[in-house]
Image (cartoon, rainbow, N blue to C red; front, side, top):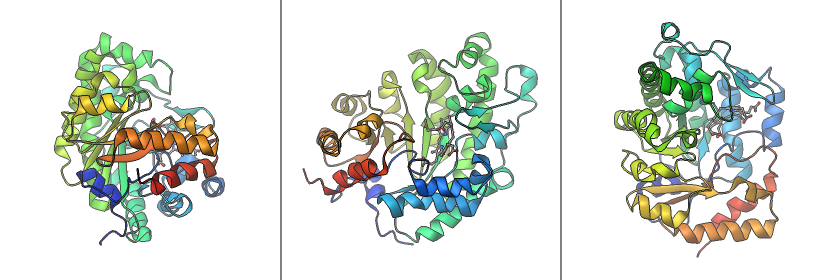
Length: 342
Ligand code: CP3
């Protein structure tokens, strides 16, 4: 099927586009009252994630209601540990919780390589339904967590400010850490290939906790696994978003991927200089800028667009949109990008 709006995929390839494409990380979610209405009909977050028809509905909402240039499939990075036998609960207002975290060699026996067809069929079905209902209006982004970020959750057992339990294992038992990371990596490769097969036009890896590692540990415990995934997944373009990994930009530039995400701490000109001209950059407005006035949002967004320049840029925030952001402010950001002809 030919896409009616292929700005996003053309920018991914480095082609010059009439204007910069725009979407937002975490656009399918709580900022929209229409999302909260669907969510309220269901028991909890996990039920929404595992119901393909509802997941498709909320994936498409930002396309209809905000006018973004790409949809992202509504799911979570934590479906991978779940499919590997490490189940989680999503605690209201608190976030993820793993009743049986992975801490010792003996715990390895409890985890398996996920089989996407058997264990994640609900995500694949949601992708097929979303593609069908999008009917070529915009491309669909698939995603997964980067292995280190998933490792951080399953070893820690929950979210954390420091992830010191997970980081402790990397010092105390690096061999066990690598075994866990490899199982996550193997599962993620199969999963992303299946997402593309089901219809995802691009896949994004979220290394949300990259910024808590030392540069040396990032090179040992995160990058090699991301690179394994990038090399193994060749059927669609890839975006790597390593939040906080300003220290790893030169290494990230060498990955076999087309797009790198920047967070709002990363200077745009400096990042382009370090990364070179071969990659498309995605980002990076401060999510808190959307709490400003409409006039200030326009000014800040245009400043960002000028700094990135006309090609090889996909406009986005520097991390996911915060749930208490006014949807009209989000629209202001999107419309500013769409109207900009700098
Ligand atoms: O629009 C989209 O981006 C698609 C949906 C999406 C969700 N999670 C839905 C969700 C995506 C891409 C994610 C990725 C994700 N999940 C990441 C990486 C991106 C990032 O923000 O760094 C991470 C670290 C997670 C793990 C996760 N999921 C946490 C820590 C939490 C609780 C904190 C929170 O944001 O509430 C979740 C829950 C979650 N995932 C919600 C949504 C819409 C909120 C739960 C709800 O609606 O009830």
